Amino acid sequence: MPTNLHEEETIKQLANFWANNLPFNNLIGLKVSKFDSKTSEIRFLWQDKLMGNPLQKTLHGGVTASALDFAGGVVVAANMIEQLEHKTTEAIQKSLSCLGTIDLRTDYLRPGRGEEFIATAHIIRSGNKVAVARMELHNEKGDHIAFGTGTYLVG
Image (tube, rainbow, N blue to C red; front, side, top):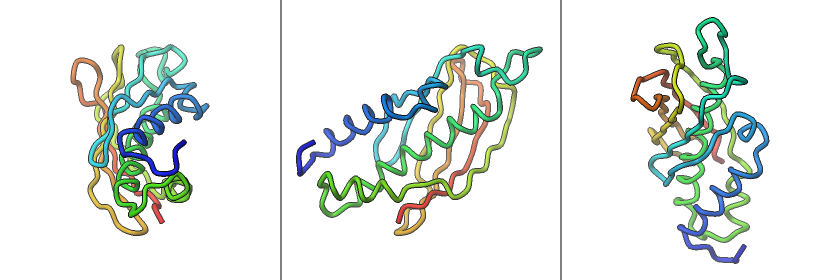
């Protein structure tokens, strides 16, 4: 990684890192499809191993919450990087090493049915110590499955 990164290159490297180095997200199949300092989008495909109710063939609630949490974490991470005065590799790594979920609220609106699921997030508040994101999960038809609010430690 170069010492002084351009924002676009940083975003590509982070997306690559998240795609290849997070075993739990890989198990579920979560992929970052878009993100910047204001919004993020995570996608994943239906797999039988993600089933929470075999009679209804719906997503497990933990998968829903995990996708929402990841979408919130991604947008918060990008927002943290944007706020850095010096975007060096060291500064980015140090900043992101502080990132963690403090609180996650998930509201389930309807059973998680579909072939593809899209979790989106946007920043509600970004401070020096805490950031808050609002997340939503839809299926490929646009059915609103769940929404959430995540509070993240950022400093």
